[in-house]
Length: 463
Image 1 (tube, rainbow, N blue to C red):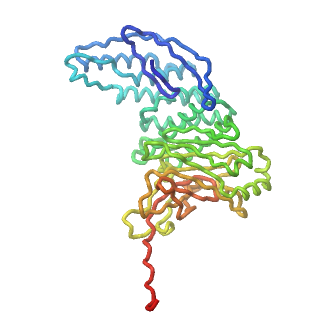
Image 2: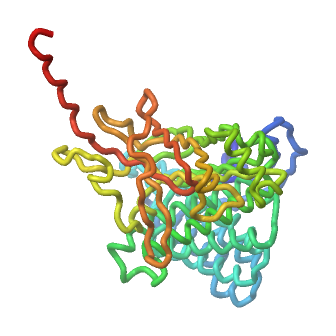
Image 3: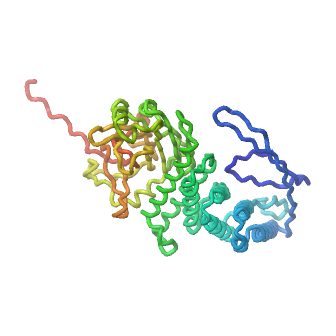
């Protein structure tokens, strides 16, 4: 018996002549623990015995057989001509499964001590096959159909779970995720499922991280893969994902989709509840093995309620929706920033050994009815929100933290970076910066070295 999640592909092998598997699928309510009726499906496997008198020969035999099967099951050029989207989705899954297959055990005496390695792990054949599959998926999305968008996202749900895309794959993967989520967001589709959104966020993050290599190999990247264009597309992708999540988010609780690259949380509450809610969720952090808690909370609840009740847009809403997003790799945005704050703006000690640096991912807070550059309230009512942002490593002794707001400037084709909090509080463990801000948007934490404290002047004689 083997357990499998919806995100994970599991290899099945014939064992002791038994080649039949029964797969059970049960849906479990994450809140109540309730279980659905089990659905079952029987799979019959065809046993394969590789040829060869050595482990190396058997591995080659196995690889040739798997590649032949992949060409048979995933002939994307032929499938594209048929216009059969479902067949393309099934073929992408089949190619992914075959590409992740492990050679059968080899117990020959001349097997070099039985050491085995999968020849498919670094095989150009399956890199090309995966790229062909992504290009076929992108073509299916031209239909604009919800079923095709869901099928495209589902078919690549586990493709890059245990490996990263190549640069060529990343260029297409980013477009597939973006266009599929755009279709779902614009169509009003609901009940897409957090498993699908979580995998889409991971794929989008993996693609964005890999596409940073375009700066070193520009000739291998499309014209639309510049740093600012990539960051803007990721922003669009995240906005589409949270729009979809909002439709399924229950009132009064935090609805989350967290992956190893990007995490999102959606919180829908009444005005009274939204003004005092501490919205928390666990996110992946660069350089940390475990997830860490990130949070946002309005710290001026009375002011916020009064402003909302007098605002023509806010006052008409029976529920307010707060969106939180954490992108673990800040360079996706900072590489597209015109310039980070100077040492003088930060109050950095010019003779310090280490220059100021970004020490967090990008943490974003947005309200559903606010525009891109909005204050939490307005220029006459300075409401505040406390953002708790995890840092990539514990803040070093003698260092200070600053909260930097990144805002896209489309005319300039870059982000602007402004100091929102020059000397932010840091928790006692040195793991989180506490940013008290008046504007919604995207924030990073920078560490810097403040000037050393001057000794107090000596006391006058006789005192």
